[in-house]
Length: 395
Image (cartoon, rainbow, N blue to C red):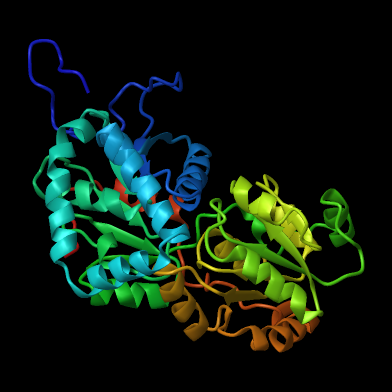
């Protein structure tokens, strides 16, 4: 944000709600919200995009910001590529890092302190008339929460937790409200010190809802899949992370389902599976239709595609979860009865056979939505209250 003529730049978010001019051409008196995500994988950005779409329907001006643009460019690449390398080549190192930071807050505090240098760059990217900041990535909490606590950011900070498990990196002093998608996650966040934790409906498209049924035959024809066979969709996120090839072979070896492997943007994985006797796909734009075409989903992270399959009422199996948050999510999902956690190849055949024979409400329990709140409604509540400075803080 550039300095105003004749004075210093104001602190971010100091203008009255709705007082700023809408540069998008929508006129004055429209609320402006900043959604801060990160381009690590696709889940964080997808949640941000879905929230933006919902709020746009209510006439809210939504600005989306990649958190890493507030950091020096080399650091952005180092974090993203380093994380990918750990997941794909040295999973034991990521698992060790995840466990260490889960048990000791020292590294999290050190990371938070290191981010202080990024405060000026972040402030320059927040419009003065922003009335709320929403985060969908934990690193953003470690920067924006302390900014809020120090008075450098004077509007509420809400965090949408994209995982089922709440790792300490999500929790930061100054974050006003945490939004989670399961009551088990809510209990975890509260145990870690968060004081305002709300259960909300997941930020995924309504096209995944079980009520948005598409003809299975049409859906299968769309992707060139056989009409009569039982199909298991194997997903591993946009990066195709984890031991996907081995999972595909194990699923094929059960003999009870035909694998459909979504490799995401992992061209190397798709090439590796070029001779695989199942059905191998790259990046899928129309995932709702693909999910209508299959009988069961096999996933390994408990991330966005897991939430999508649960929303659609598809039986969901967690198998060979990725290290770190993947294994932690698998445990929580299984304990909540949302997915079936298969730990050995020998268990796959009976589990897949049973799940593909189930129909209707028996197939898969949906995410609890009875007491959940829509994120757009929650945001309207927070902004409409006008009580920005006295809201309860987390940790």
